[in-house]
Image 1 (cartoon, rainbow, N blue to C red):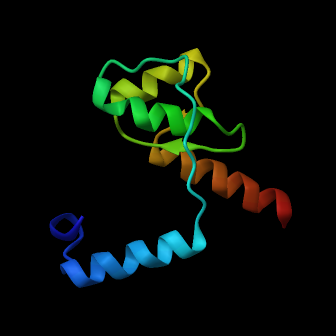
Image 2 (image 1 turned 180 degrees about the vertical axis):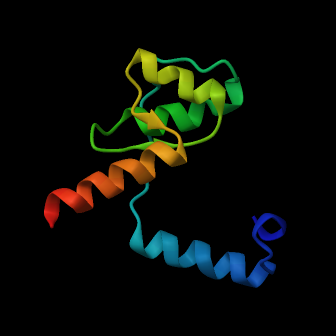
Length: 90
């Protein structure tokens, strides 16, 4: 995370402490959906536990799971949904 986001190790540690204080740890059950890349299974498991959740990704292997019921969209589609939501509240 440090190299990816240009943060020092102390900054990463501080972010993780804040996340632990504000968040809830969830251990999802194993999803029925199996992604093409086994390294994505934890993402699919998390995305499968909530009907209100939305997985936003550019990963084609995850996007294809939308046809199997996973609530997954591209960033462009997510922004479109946000704009539609804003217009409905005006």
